[in-house]
Length: 523
Image (tube, rainbow, N blue to C red; front, side, top):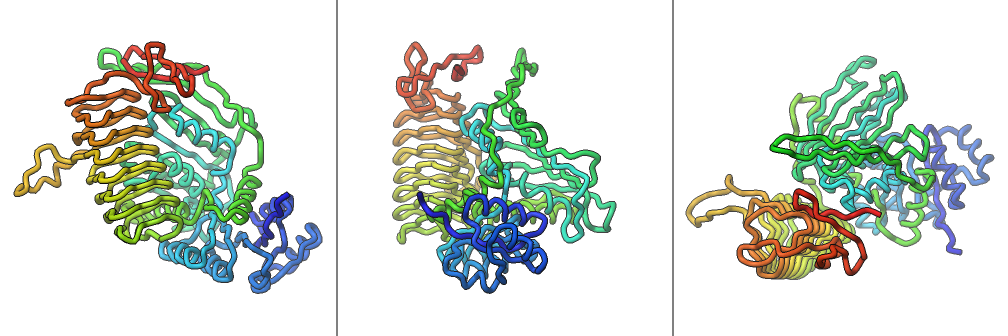
């Protein structure tokens, strides 16, 4: 049996006591530390581990990771001290109170070759993981709208407002589902108990991929509610953390169809989704242990923590200035867990996700956002503000111009072409005429195909080599020719479907809807 790495917990108070319990139950707790001697003594007797000073914990070579459940204002400085002593760090949210401090933490982690994990607990909740899987598999269709309510009477704080206290978990989940930072944030709030410390806030987030989201938080509310609602064009989901386990994740197969230009809602019976019951905090703690043991990047790493902090920062500015704030690009792109060949150039203000590989003679410009585990071949160009989702593969000699957005899992074949203006002239400035080209998840674009700008390529569609796309493309459509026309249908696995509409690779059955769209038959 693999021995678990030794972990120390610093801070055994309101939330720290739960971390102590879980790491003890996982057999990894080696020491605790608390500024209150009485609390430290109590935990020493209860869990039979030494109570050490923070300085002594740093000196213990057998302790490989330190868990910080301390005041937010010292998260960044304490995390950097731990990293410099050669320890991996698990820090409760938020990662820091200032973007510059979060960036310093990331630089230090990179320099010391250590991992930082941020305690965004709900990313480890079985119900949220099941919901995220359903979204990634397209079971809700195209995401349109997300909202989160986190309401309670207390715990009321004076050192931070309710948004900083309650909202980070919801921001983390929404960013995970949306797959990108929001384009803009608008927050309003009100204070009733302490002047200048908001007791309730409402935040609206708008994303370039068309998703809207809002977060409503309050610690001055008559009842407790922790609910996340996700609206897709094929179904709707509710994650309610205040109900029994067998009711926490609920799917409504509601749709809105159009008849003679009029939208008509079509309701269906709700379905409870079966999920395995497990304590989210224990899952989170186990994940940290696995990352320390296997030297792998945490799901909620420091870059994810920085993204959440970016939204918190924009929200604070919006609340104070009473107007919508452009979130903009991340101001820092650390060389953490991605690879760039020495012949390539990545602008310091481009955002590159973990696990991504950028090969020879490529150029990534300022403001580009590249997701996790992306592979970019030789001579790839990515312009300002281009968005590339997770797990995309961009083959040799591909240029992604401003206005191109790729969702997760898109394949761009060698020398395929994107445009961003319909009638270019060398001597005529047309930057204000750029058109958006939106490529949904799982699309394959063949070698030397051309995608004329201003069109949307539906999920899992397949553009044959050499085709020229001049119209919107339906999901799962097989397009070929000049101009491209639909000549068949493709499965999720990228297999051409025969007359029986059964995927030869996976065995899934499909059907064609009255709207001439392809959908998978469940069951």
